[in-house]
Image: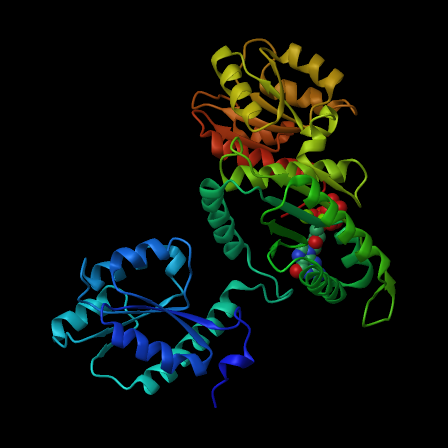
Length: 441
Ligand code: GH3
Ligand code: MG
Ligand code: MG
């Protein structure tokens, strides 16, 4: 049995794009598909289709090969190169019955090749079944099993898309990172299974509480990420704060022992703007706000805006120690661009004084320096209770005479060989800072 069109809201109806310059075909398909709960958009050329597809995402495309302005085969090939259309079925419906053309159609990514004349009812049934099947499969792959929220991969794709729209319409949007507080302890106290229950319950809570347009995903472990379209940072923060209050006001009862639990969360909100030019930096900014929320005592929401007036919370301080002024300047510039606070020292002694006074979160230390070298500096940092928690990344070179083993014995946490790639150093810094902060991802 098929569902009647008027049983379904516009949003529930499947959207089918028919590209065929024969208006009779378009009309027949539209009439036949409508009672099956499918809305049909008819277009007569590839050019029109290209224009419409910039803003519309149909569930399925029916395409003729002979179009007045282009070949349907070319259009199909083009769509298949665009990851936005990876889930959209493409069916050729054409008079062209030549086997080579059929094979070419399949090679270019068509799901089905039907030659005219065709039975409209059969086509409607086929198209509906096809869309359902693809939607089921898609749901399966884009969701996280435990929480039912979107996967991180799907989130990244949606974020890319949002950035793309932003470049066209300038509408503000935000990303919020949420991390459950002290979740390791929750696991330790009630067990991993109950911990899973909390995660899944929190996932449902987020999905039910947020707006339909927000994209909520599990970012990893006990971290969640939300894309909030058409929302400025102030509004986003207010939404998350309401969410936090509502979460805390409804009791959480663990199902196995019926224990009442209190699990809080911290959140970081960042708004996309022209200066944060890519999705990666936007997430990084949200992560910094989250870091600040944790540092300020957890169970709260921070936005990157707020961090501007609180330099001590804004971002971790990094000490760069290298006798080469070129490397010092380069790292200072690159790290500052990523909004870290940076101090530099040209030798071990100077670094030790700075570390004592400023207690940076992390030091990037050249191992080979005249006078006090990196090994000795690291040992000295480790001897002093004030500086022993500072994470150290050793910069080593081929002519580094001490072995890496020595460096690790001295107490370095990680190392990079010179010449190094900055993105890799940045990732290592992030990882260590997370550890310094008692987080693992
Ligand atoms: P913080 O407030 O700093 O975030 O502390 P935390 O303990 O939440 O942070 P940390 O990152 O140290 O620990 C996260 C914990 O989340 C550790 C890990 O065992 C737990 N966790 C991650 N994924 C899962 C999961 O799928 N199920 C369960 N039960 N626990 C998970
Ligand atoms: Mg946590
Ligand atoms: Mg975490």
